[in-house]
Image 1 (cartoon, rainbow, N blue to C red):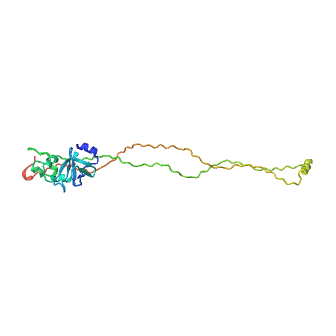
Image 2: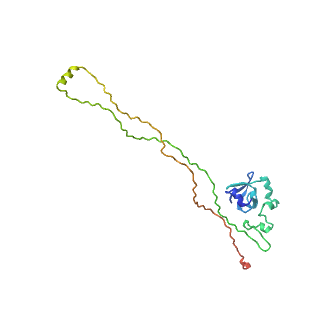
Length: 237
């Protein structure tokens, strides 16, 4: 597995991550990510920097990574003469002088030249999806409403007409001095209020994806070459 394949599976993995054995021993911090391996800083467990392959990292996130080996399996590695270093540690140098160089000076040397690799960190932005809930609910409110309703009712109308002449005498004789009661039914309307549900509005709920541009920033390190000449030994070519 190479760096690109590993980051596809563990996008949050980066330099600064602490490396542990699978039984919890703190092995050091990831300080570089090469194409086929990661470089781990020296610390309380190892006396110098070493590398491990991406295939041997069992699990990783932004803060922790787990090497798929027990502490007891790694204990022999404390000895720099351990033969397993040749297989596992890409920083192993055959030249004793190179072994004593600073970490940034490790690289390939031939008889006629020394080559140094200058590294530079690049920002890498990855996105992770998180889920949040949007709650939609119906609530019931009570309010007062007024309606104007036309109602009708019957009223009693009494009209008086004078009776004159012979008709007055006849009528007075037929029913004179009797008490009489007449019931006249009068109708009136009353308002009865009732309620019925009606559909006033239909709401459609959907999701859509909105893409925005967000600026991020971070500090990166860059290696530069500095050449210092000894003035007592002439010019440096």
